[in-house]
Picture 1 (cartoon, one colour):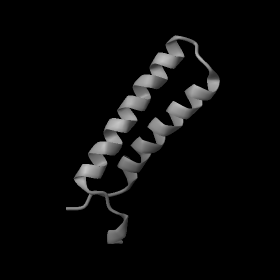
Picture 2 (picture 1 turned 90 degrees about the horizontal axis):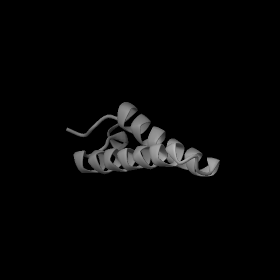
Picture 3 (picture 1 turned 45 degrees about the horizontal axis):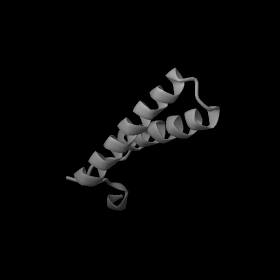
Picture 4 (picture 1 turned 90 degrees about the vertical axis):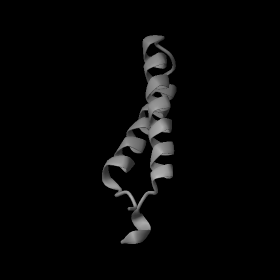
Length: 59
């Protein structure tokens, strides 16, 4: 299934976005911010890392 592969550039972008969302999740959590922001940033970070973990990279 070659259509389900990530290019290295797209994988890097997803990784950076996941890291930024994880950082924002931590900031909201420490500030005891709104729950909806915790869910938003947590789900974005988790989904980005899951995509990177389970979708193969193009060679």
